[in-house]
Image (tube, rainbow, N blue to C red):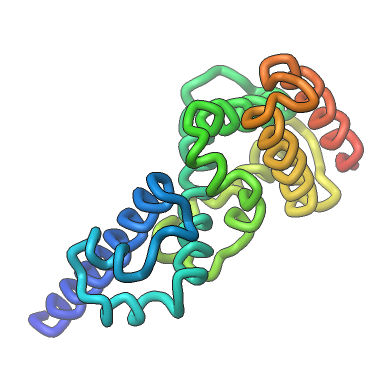
Length: 205
């Protein structure tokens, strides 16, 4: 039992260190921009020895990849949790709700938008580190399939559908939110949602 407790404590400490490095990097990237932040800056912010960094990440690019994976999943998990508090049962409306929820969060935090938005699909489908911070019950693809089934919809390929919707939403909203081009985001939304509905219908059997 003592041995099991030691292993458990060691794993908890490792996860805590990992979390601190990711959160420190996230805050610094938002404040200064990715290029202006060094590994030393990140470890100083996290109060962790620089050498410890390399126990978790190959380099700063590897950390960014894992950070985007985490933040993307967190956004989708938040959106799904919010959806569950509504009475929405129609599958298309559920997908629209999730996209609307996530894009609204990003539109209110443009620094996070610059870091995450164009990489949303990469983060969502990168499962290299997913076991560290998520669980199967919140798996986005499984949630998508279950929601479709509850609406009596059979999807050709749920992964492809999710990828297309996320790519469309993240890439187009990036320009609309940050530059107001070709339309202001609020004006663009109905066009986006109509396109998403068409994608869903094209991918339904």
